[in-house]
Length: 444
Ligand code: GDP
Image (tube, rainbow, N blue to C red; front, side, top):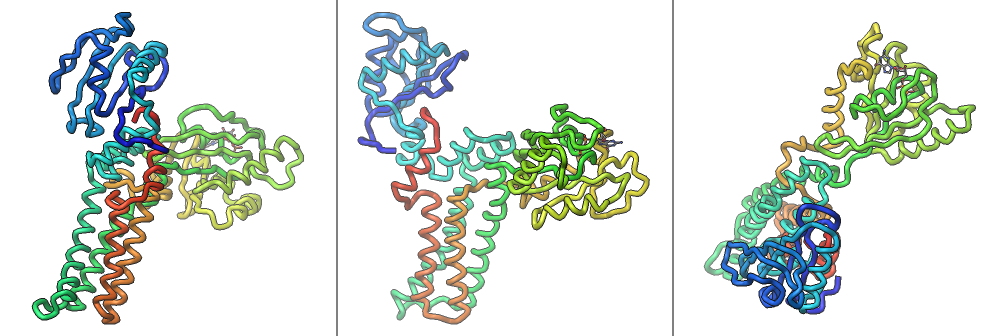
């Protein structure tokens, strides 16, 4: 993103382009009110009051609209903002946008409104990133957690840690700068402080894997020899009949994928029964796909037929899993006589017995903590900053245990603070900033 003048007036369509009830055009910057005065029939604005009127181009009516004024600094971007709510047809929205552009606004870049909100200190970087997460969230659970970040939960958590580190740094610095008046802090104090800081960082990092799964989703492959009920399980999990179930071995020939919302987005992959030396060519292709799906999968649901027990053929297929995480599923529990294998989850894809327990187990296996208990979502950039901070504090801890000079210890403590400042955006390079806002959509 290349912004020539950071504070010129920008505009964009804020709603998806297409037919809808309402379309919104946003204008932000010093000239927002000048522009609207030229193209709107009712431009005497008061704070917190919207005006009704017509957008006009040289006296020609374009659309009947409602205009919402936001006076700086009380707006999303912190600048003067105008939002025009017009009828939601593609052309009317574009006509108004063109009129605004003609009157001296510039088309906004991706994420530029939110970038301005950040630059004008209306939100910190973790909040700005939460905006992108909310827009892109694939599950309602993720949207809810992202909202917590938007309200500043992550920011507060990180600031608490920063304050803890800052307090230690102040004590060390005072001891170094005023050796006659201030005693340097005891090493035991440093050790216990650093241990506490590390555990605070660990708490924020605890949900990192779950956060990543929230964002990217998890791939779960259903694997097993033919006819054990993989397609039936796929359907039972999705509660639909997309995969074709038959009782002839080897009839699921393609790889079928569906997204399942378990709070986290799970891509469920039903594969052709893996069977070495399949004679049928079409099935052989399916077998290749299965192996690929297996490579991609974060977790495997390994299915066998509980009425037959684990056979040699099952063991062969199981061998393909290598070191993948898996859940052992004994299907057809409704017709099985023995249900004694404690390592297996007994289910019946046919009757639905055990399927909801399986869903719970599946969520627990792919997430490091229960998504419902997740207070923060972190993204990989934020996790990287937290890990950097943690590594520096670990160094400081080690140095304190070795009773090294506090001058030296303070260097690591300062690095930890810088890493956290990078997370909140207090200290950030243009490259990182542009990379973040490039992932937004235009109009946000
Ligand atoms: P796949 O080849 O592994 O995908 O197996 P399918 O899902 O096509 O199922 C093979 C056969 O087993 C079908 O006749 C299913 O109706 C039957 N089947 C699947 N799950 C169960 C189950 O839990 N209980 C019983 N009794 N039959 C099942």
